[in-house]
Length: 518
Image (cartoon, rainbow, N blue to C red):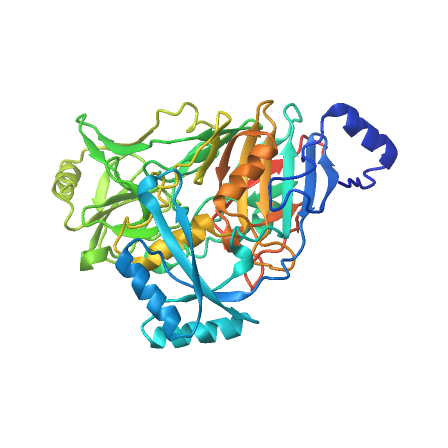
């Protein structure tokens, strides 16, 4: 293993290396648990600011046997197996199968079939099109992204924020309203951060909500930006420390002057639409799926920048402006609230609409209330970013993918089943946050979909990497094309999107102590 340390701020390299050697043990083990045991591995390190260190790990080499292939969807029945084998036979391809499961669930076992060897993505996609013409749902994939590839390669970036460094740990969201997505590098620059990685999951398409709005809990400096998805984990960032919250509850309601309450279903989202679902305590989350609700009440704080859209089902979203005195007035179609007014959007078929109209007619004042059983999440200096699946908790490996929303056969959609397989059990770019026993916070990114430089990690491989780095608690954040790490305003990894760095909903950042940084 090699280590290099750059010349920093007039400090001789030799002196700095000696200081690091005495100050703490090596963060990265000599061999990360990826691929074969004796793969080549190198580690370079640099100090970003006092108590904030960056490590880059390169492990393995390109898999020379890697090839483009065709892959089946999720298969769970003998009839499905027969159908898939017939498809491969029709195409003149020999198919092999591999068994998988989701998390620790024995009921979530399934098979995936693959076959064919194609020199390029274009050739594999042409074969995929031929299969589709034969009513065979097969998909072009690269074999290096299967965990059977024991060669790699991998490129992993790790930033360690040591306790007592004085560094501030925070999250920043994009500007409110249409077009609110921003690149991690842009969010980092605006916040004056020394380190930034992409944050939680967010809406990408208009049909799923407001693009860029977090699809899960988001709290920025104690202010709720987006409501929680039931049974989903999150990361709490506060005073330079991080905590993984296995579950986070958030009750939002209007407290009327007469003492009655009206439940609020969501904050800053399109009425009738919830991404990743789990709106109510009785509902389980479904990752990368959008649910529809006929009865929905959504609150938009004053100045939020969001314009409540027409609800689903062809139902109108009835809107009310809420003044600083708590009084409600109904807004005509096309009317906009004053800059100081909040907005309440209620689907026209909501069971709560008559009561809201009655309270408004009686000139009852209302106050928005937000409550959580998690201490301190709604206080100044608190930031919460949604994520999942949970990787580690109190030193134990957690495999709760299914209960947290990554299951198969939870909706009647074979494409969603395959998406969940790709998401969990194939290699992808990843971003994660971990906490060591001594309070050190780890921000980790792994490049992926780059077969010559970094193939990415499965969720299980990410879990093992965080454990090897010494994390006691760890949470997966958004990944794929969103994965990005920015140091001192500069993007240092290679995002997998062909268009470059993706615009995201929020980012996790570190600001160094006053006067720190390069």
